[in-house]
Length: 98
Image (cartoon, rainbow, N blue to C red):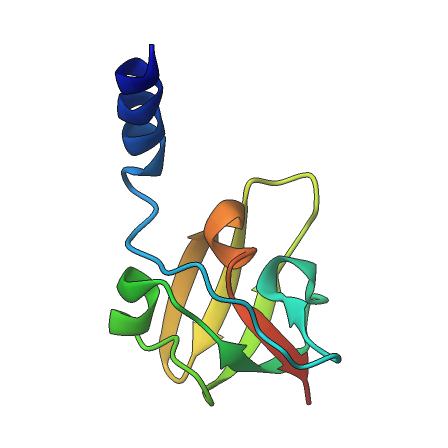
């Protein structure tokens, strides 16, 4: 039974990228999924390797182009690039409002 549960956990993690379980210790941080549309935020903590490779690393300013809570994705801009992020991944990225 235990092996079945571990295999299920691995299958659920596929497609979400590698990540480490660390927490951001800044009190004023929120996750990217909570950011308001048309706002600019700065990433303070991101441990997801796939999004870091796309340019969403610590210290980068990100503009939230579309973030509606009833939709599964949000659209962000980093420099000239536009990305559609899954809400589950965006919840792992900690940001502070500018």
